[in-house]
Length: 506
Image (cartoon, rainbow, N blue to C red):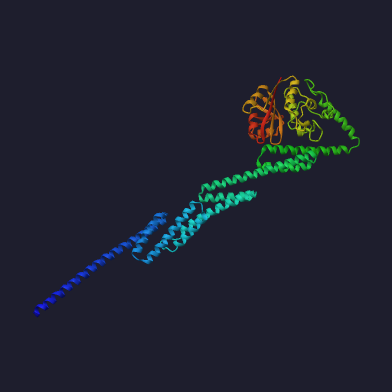
């Protein structure tokens, strides 16, 4: 019995030992399996975190965020607090960049810049990344902030009419946009520059116009030296604007004022000589004889009414004109002295004389010159003056003048521009055109020279300016050469429309 009990206990002990060994072996196997699984999880976590870094470096932040979030989930499963904290830094960096990009795309550059700076701060905590890339993003955002700040400041200065500073800022903004490759911004800056330059030009044009008006008032009051100062100021502005037609007009006004000053000086010398007044009167009579009666054709003076025109006629006949020479500048003596209508100091030839000058030049072209006194008298005595001559001559009065002289006359009001004007003048050879411009209205005499196929315009500074612009050679005598009257009316700055075309043939 004892033997059996002892053997039984031995067997139980052996069984326990075997069981323990099996259990230990199982535990060891389980531990090995768990350890392998943990290593795989950590390897997977590390791999995803590394992938996240790679995607960050490539700028693919949404994929990087997905990888980082997966890595964090693995770190949580591993209960690795340090890894969780490290991955959280990556996630915050990625989220900051994504938000910064969204704000950048929305044009909220200042806010975007702040997020990029935040991302840079997180990057400095990560050994595998550096803050440089995110600093660059912040600098780009800051550059956009600076660009729009320049645009805004330039716009404000434009409204305040501080054009020089505004132009400088728009130009600086253009350089900034070019450096950024920001095409839309470059267009904004270019538009700003163009707008400011247009405003500068308009301001200069308005200032020049005001100076011309002041100079004109001085001319009318006889303050010729003062008028020159105003006209020269306008001239400088028109030269800056490269407005050739108005440069020409300003020079004409300056030349006229200078001539009047010279005439005054000569008159002062004559007034200082004893007995000179009587001799001057005789000289005036000689001028009357030199001017002569109309050369050929009927007398168109029509007699004088007792309303001031008689004194105008006597005065006008006292002025000498070479009836073979065209008047190509009504502001030049003696044309500028011819009086028409009421004698109020404004109705001399330089002011309201374009109508009679056009008729005078047309009669020379027709081979039938008349003294200006007779032409003006015809208008004065046949209801041909607008507001007593203050605003010049009616087109119908010019038409009647040539009809009474026996010419074939055709008169069109508001003639069609395209082709019609050129063709009508070609057909007759001589025409008188009236057009409205920004200051008033103007008559011009026009000759068509078939041998050259071009038109010659008399007494028109704008036509002379166009001739220079087109590079056409002027003839040695008076007049401006142009290739098309229609084109002259359509393309000349300041001319609004033509309202009368009179064509004359023998």
